Length: 210
Image 1: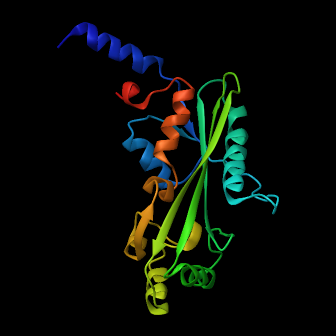
Image 2: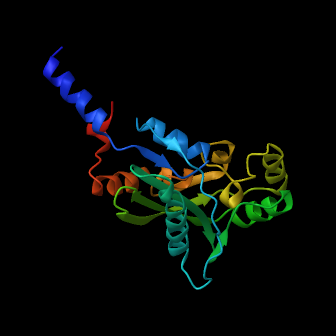
């Protein structure tokens, strides 16, 4: 092994800015782990009330910024990453279902149709407060779903806590006929957009990977 290469590699890893993910979502945690990015978790509890005149992409972006800004003051250094995902159909935002009846209503609204998923993404450098934010959009097409199927899916518990009452990375995938755009955006953390934002902060995922 070339010792100089190994020394350079070790130096790059040592110099990496700490990454703090402002999210308690296991799905976002898993995506970051797959990218080889070590991180710590700092859950952000923010007011999600927004101006009703905002477009869905603006809502997702604004909520991601709020989460990042809520966590940033807790750190003197590091990159704070935050995201927020919303499901939209007929210009209506579907959040997380409040109960099983709400989940059923959402699934029956989505069945047999296409809808859009928006994930807002924000990154803040805690050392200098430099901030960048963006939003990714993906179109998802559901096959027709019977009420019996929807109830059976709800009985698994998976829809609860998920925007739009489904998880594309789980059993909810059986309802997805096709998608147009970033799959990871639907999961909750758009990898393509994340890589672009991190590059603005001098972090290249490939060269920084251990």
